[in-house]
Image 1 (cartoon, rainbow, N blue to C red):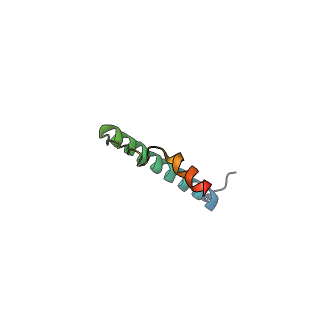
Image 2 (image 1 turned 60 degrees about the vertical axis):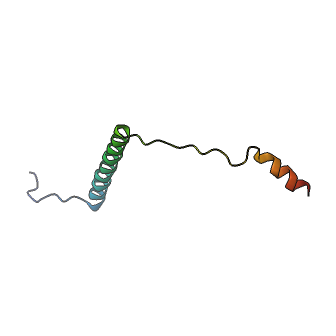
Image 3 (image 1 turned 45 degrees about the vertical axis):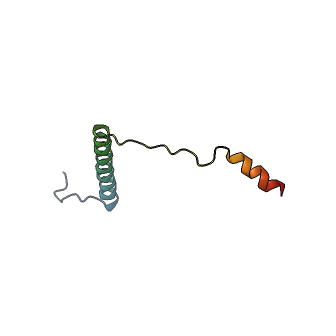
Length: 64
């Protein structure tokens, strides 16, 4: 005959379930962020280098 007592969930199982639940929440948040970024793209500015030839300065200081 089957036991009539209530089965209890172990702490390990509850921790695993919480981890899966949190992972799904983080994944949904990332997906939503990607969706918002695709809807409103921000322009990316590329800065020009301050020095045209950065290698020339290294050679001068190494020879001193």
